[in-house]
Image (tube, rainbow, N blue to C red):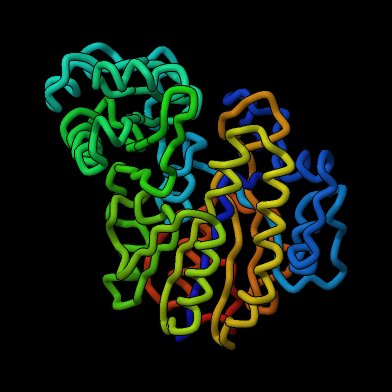
Length: 392
């Protein structure tokens, strides 16, 4: 049959959507602004057609791109990773996951604290993950109270020092919060365990021990559907957490983009008749949220350098899709995600219905393409990108 690879560059947007003003994002353009500010060169993505999607100051138009190219509009309400990845998999949400700009209600915090056996929680308001442990880490060491905070995203985050709360205990706390507290009207997209270590004045998050507890996705997503039909499904990076550990034949969590790329290349050497879903998180987690354009640019260049190795491992019947899940403009004043179109590259270009794919109506075109590629009967909101000869 061949393999279908989908790589999501986390937080890579290509300009504000028509409804971006409703989210306060009307001026955001992650890739466009990044290229303007840093002059970021991406020669391999340029050859693929990245500069054909929108005008980019440092990535010119490619006359004969290797990929079919376009951009996708998010139809779901929201602009977080769970919403974006679920829509890629064919699930559209009519209402966003709840957010808590003023902190969580007392009943939520009380139920959480009672359930895990502590008197109280610290903070309970939106906060930067690095700043919250700097400001409250010492009090946490003295009292043992967990640090609970949120962000502009739909997240309930729990930070604890490993010398106070063992990591496995922190995971149990977050699992309790997910299953017993944060459901129904308070059903946030993710509960996130944030262990940290170090001394006062020098606390540091242990990023590779972070663990996300997501809402369970609706059953009709394309990953479940493919697995039901005997197609092997693989997760690389945080994908497995966004889908609540459901639907995948095998998963490989990663500590960095470099490890994610390495895991992908290793898997490509052995994959057959498989759907491989990859998330490269560093652009978002390390650089977008921290408003670091130069770091973001270097991270994209790291991926760009890996393109030839990835393409060289593709077999004749394989397809590769490169996209994003939302924006996260490191040049803006906001550390939040942004409501943006995301890029769409499909390799090789002759497998697509047309080289210029234009503006797609939904991220779910990826789900429809995967179902079409494996000749699976499934109805998703999107439209397949493949031409007739590309179908199995």
